Length: 92
Image (tube, rainbow, N blue to C red):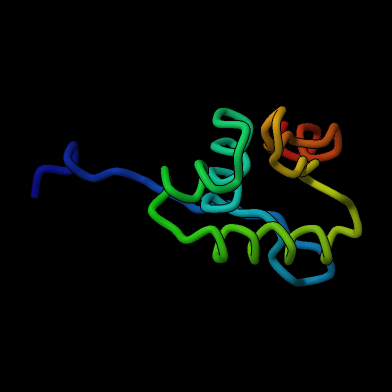
């Protein structure tokens, strides 16, 4: 066995009162929302449905008791989503 081919890996997540709140997939979702300015575009980029992305966001917000994304409805000026200061601090 060539031990140089072995790699150490780990997985990290954040829990609140024993329940997971934030892990790799949710961080990627928040990153994509930040980059694309849209929950729908972020979901598409990650290969998930809008409904799935929305459910993840809602679950995180409920567990944390904090809003993570500010949502703006569409219309003439267009809609979109931006991360709240709390979400940015959480991801730091």
